[in-house]
Length: 444
Image 1 (cartoon, helix red, strand yellow):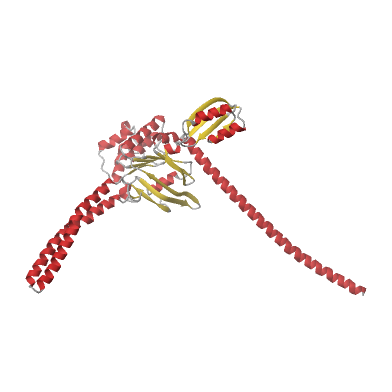
Image 2 (tube, helix red, strand yellow):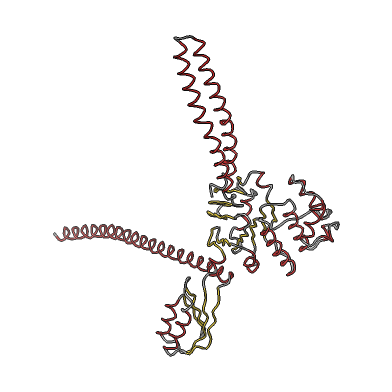
């Protein structure tokens, strides 16, 4: 990841610093030999041979041929090497952290989005998705971490000018028309987009017939379409969409899905934050799942959904059959319905062998339904596992702390009681001894 952001500067440094050296040595060799021989012959027999051959031939040929001819091929090789390097990722961030007073919103998030790749951000409310997006775009300053956009630092205006952004919440001036909104944003971005291209952008989001209407009369769904047009109008290389399908009807969601896929075909990178898991599953190449400000899981859909499930309806499952099911994979049971999550890489004979083994044990098999885990099921599985781990850790810590505190309190109470008893017993013994001595004296 580090080599990509520096690919551009490497090409510039190779071209800028080496080219002068090509001219330099050629001039040096010519000047050196000419000066050496001229100085030698002009100075005379005593000075000439000593100065000329020593200065001229030694300096000129040694500097010129050694440096000059070797620089041209080296420069060509460097240019070919730089040209062959892959482009820097559209998004690269490492160790992003953000804390609001006592609450940690983002805790060590690292992710990448490649060129022409669609990456989805998933997670429950409050997981830190929108905060991560705002830190990537420079709208929120991170407490720690690094951000690179399109090979440049995230806060570089040249990088941000090539990014299109649809925020989760936005509002346009109600007296403007969509055409005027696009013209305003093109002017603010410093881009040069002809009016015909702006009209095509409105047509792509379904607002071609409403280009001259006032935004104040638009529904929420139509304003969402206009926000998409604003994000796309300046020909961005990276598009960040925060809940792009909110307030859209099913037709609008299908349009957004087609739009994202068309951006991918054009090589535009897309970072998509959405609660609609089905939409993410349809358009995204990779998914990053956030929970409590951290990356709970990430990977391609094939990696996250690679597990296979086997759903069975069985009767007469005894302990031996139960053990046979548990040995095949992770087992969950509800009544007569059993679900076995097969491990990755299991061959095709695993299911027939399992069913045959159950039948041999006297189990009646009523139904066998193979299937794959959906993204929603995988997401819930990851979040529940993470939460249960956190709860068990908290309970264990609480119990340990409570036991330790209780034991400490018991020891302290015991020691205090012992000291109190000793003091009381000592005073009582002293009084008893005194009283006994007094009575003995009286009797005497």
